[in-house]
Amino acid sequence: MSSTDRLQRYVADECGSCTDEDLSKRLAELEALNDSVGGSDLETDVDLLSALANETRYKIVRMLHAADDDELCVCELSPLLDVSDSAISHALSKLTDAGLVTRRKEGKWRMYRATPRANAVLVALDGSRSL
Image: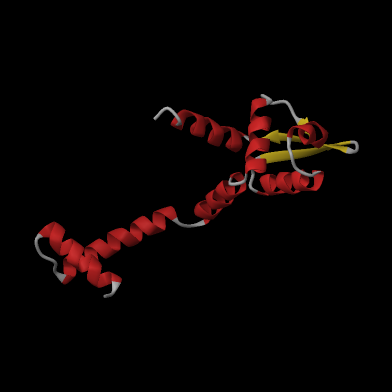
């Protein structure tokens, strides 16, 4: 059974009948819905969520968010995370690529800060816990 056949059965159940015009109208509505959630925003959002879907990366973003606009160096993060320095560097690189962290070089040190987008995501997560 094709997906269009299933949709036709669904429309018939909802409307009491299903003409070709009803089916075409519903398909057009669904295609518009699909177009509204696709595109580059979808890809960017998936990259952001993927970057947060790791305990080390999520904890780094949480710590940078909690630092309240202060920057942290890798040397400050390292003693708090139970992973290698290379894993921290890799995590910070992925977070930077996802737009969750900014990086600034100061001499031989690299300083990191949560971005406004990262802060907004964490505030939304915090607020959703009580729902």
